[in-house]
Image 1: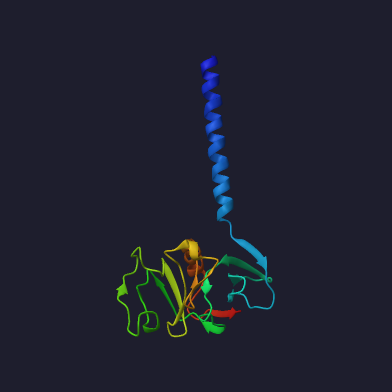
Image 2: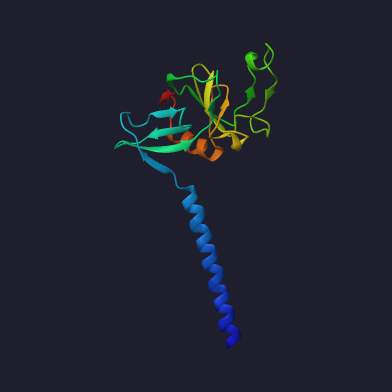
Length: 171
């Protein structure tokens, strides 16, 4: 009888441990919803000085995402629209980053592809909101004008937006 009680207690302890772990993981995956006034629902707002992207919901609320933004000399601000959506986008360094000529194409899905798992392009493909192969760069001033997100976050944003979604980038 004592052995059965010990095994039952051990089983309950294991189940409770898994439940606590699952709750912690679920809590960490919850998206932060914040108050954001003055924007239409469905708009993407990037505040480069905060290194945050907001996807505006109804009722003056927005989903908040950490992002990496343009470093000094490469930051931009203004209005744009999402012009195209890509999963596993290929990438090629533009001439201004590759000694005056285009770099080689890095295939989509390659581990060294800086675009990550998805991209939302703007301004004729010059800028994008995209994932990254370098998650440590999110939250910093690191890019050449693009907005970098964690791959899990760009997947979520990608699923919510359509071509034509307005984007406002503020300093």
